[in-house]
Length: 340
Image (tube, rainbow, N blue to C red; front, side, top):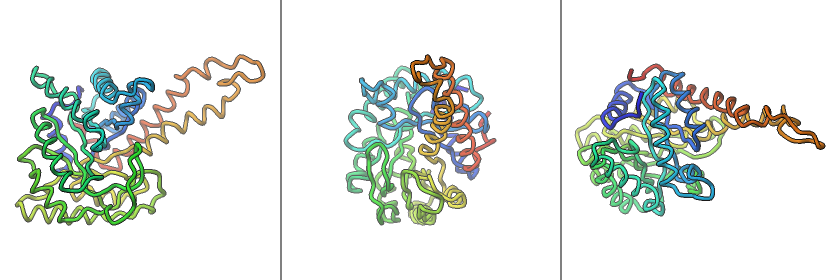
């Protein structure tokens, strides 16, 4: 299937919300991790979302180039070619973009899509995330209004965040405190500023104790009921049931029942990164330890070309990450729900 068109992406999100499931949004940093994500979605018979962060986009451009727009564009164009060979529908998304990276990442990528739409093409990415969690809410919402208008004109869904996700991702650090829990008042202010769909479609990353990083199950103190509270508060004020399409960030270490409860309140997208990174790297480490005298030229020997050929361990890495993506689809109940 091709990459989702704007209409198909809207249908995907609507089906998730109505059907009580969420799409895994898999962070990728290379063509190989992209292929692993596509394979995992296909094996689970689930549509899905592939996303790239600012750091991932910079890495994709080459470690001496370090240009986020170049890397993101290259990924999107490559994805359009290879995704067509898989029997699932994929949406492309860019992850956390803080204020200081807007002019070097999100805004120019939206401009690319505006140019594409003007030529009768689909946008380059189907959605972009504005992360205003580090600025005051009033400023966050002002910037969100500007970006949402541009996204609407480019047929792009915007994602925005209110509240703070704790932990660290791509150098952005969130403290672990009460700001991890979005309030109903903040959610109402958001709806008053950017609407509930009539000003352009957006997804909301509202926080309920989420923390980026690696944690054992039970360590993260989630309160999914926060999502229920904000949906009910905004829904009552605007006369709309579950007005927000919600996004779940920082899910590593979350209990499965907490994930399912969050989905029941309108979560349609859950970011997966830490767990798939480990799944990709683990078999590479096993290969190196098991074949140390093949991947290294020990004591003047020549090693084993078949052992240090990147394809040897790359195939195992792809298979392992794909299995973790398929597991995420089952956890989020999107397995078996593909559009075609």
